[in-house]
Image 1 (cartoon, rainbow, N blue to C red):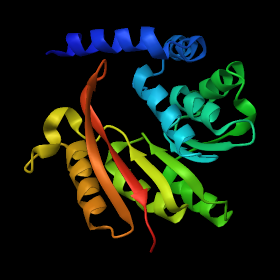
Image 2: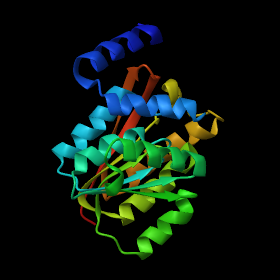
Image 3: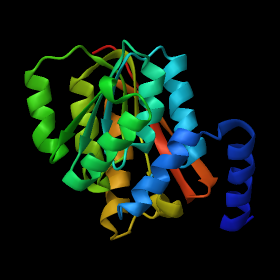
Length: 222
């Protein structure tokens, strides 16, 4: 099968069990504002939502807001009493995300923090927040291992950490790759394998976004 075939299947899935006017409107608003079309797919957004619900997540940390597409799925999952803290590097993206979140009716449960995540994560840690139940990482790929290290500091045993875009079109298997994102993905996988507090796997995916995949880790006892 080819990427167009995968996209056709994604379209059928979305039409059948995922279609959602609020998140579809987000993609339109993002495009009108000139944001890059690098959101998770609709099927992946719904997956994040169901995962958060099935694990009973009430506190979610997201690294990489963009226009708030995945944020809305996560914010719905935590419910009115839950909280999502999300980091976005670009101020324009954060502005668009705020507008999208308000229109979707979940703005009051989302805290958007603007700036480099590696600068803001220490600030968040100093606030001594309640541990996060789920962490979703979908930001600059070269820092993925660093983001997971911070996620470990901000979670608890049983928390889930998900890192998107790890497979890199199959290039993850290329040991000699000079692509910084591929090298970072390999560094992440090696870190997940070596870190005794994490039990992890990587799941390959295909769809409208092509061939990629995500790392899935569960935090264990120290």
